[in-house]
Amino acid sequence: MITLKKQSRRLELSKLLRCLLIHFMDLHVMPEAVNKIYEIKGRKQTSPLAISVADVSDISCFATVDHLPNGLLDSLLPGPVTVVLRRGDSSILDKSLNPGLDSIGVRVPDFNFIRAVARGSVSALALTSANLSGQPSSVSIKDFENLWQHCAYVYDGGVLPSGRAGSTVVDLIKPGLFKILRPGSARQETTAILEKFCLEEVP
Image 1 (tube, rainbow, N blue to C red):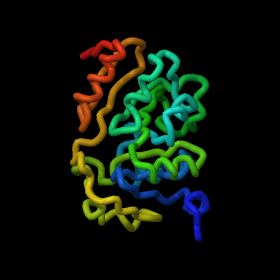
Image 2 (image 1 turned 90 degrees about the horizontal axis):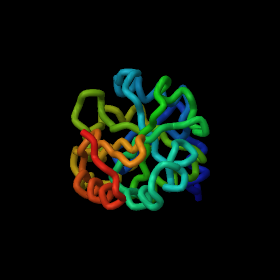
Image 3 (image 1 turned 60 degrees about the vertical axis):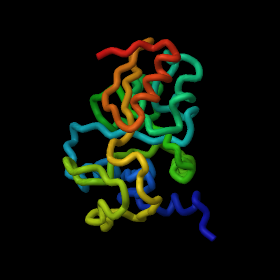
Image 4 (image 1 turned 30 degrees about the vertical axis):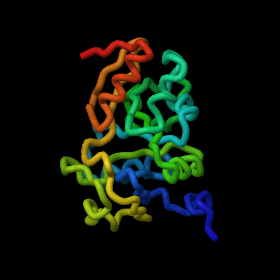
């Protein structure tokens, strides 16, 4: 029997992983894998990619979180939220990802399988929606069937219940403030949590 950890190690870095969240993910954030994502999607190199990690406690390895109230990230994540944070000097994130930017979007998905893959890879997973750039986001694997040939594996987790709205993206770089960059599927819940922790919204 092939364990998840053994299987993840066998995936080629030049290939991409398909998952329930309808995202492309590489097994390690490395230059050749990141470039492959841009190539397949027809995405502009100036459009940044986010990352996915296994646990909330992992975020501090890739971004600065010291300025956030205790318990805030645990209240937001896991879930359909992408938090944008400053990388900072201590980030172990490969410099090839989003060069020139000192910020990074981070997700902890509410799906144990993907979190297990991230945990087994011993790294962050670069991710983006599984569709050609400029096209509607996918909600099932059939929506991006034309891209299957570029995937090492295709995992079918069913239809996304949140539809095409995607995750709610919130900028948490400045202490005490937040800015909603994309409403997504959980804006109301996200805003309520942030205000509970006394953060103020900026336009």
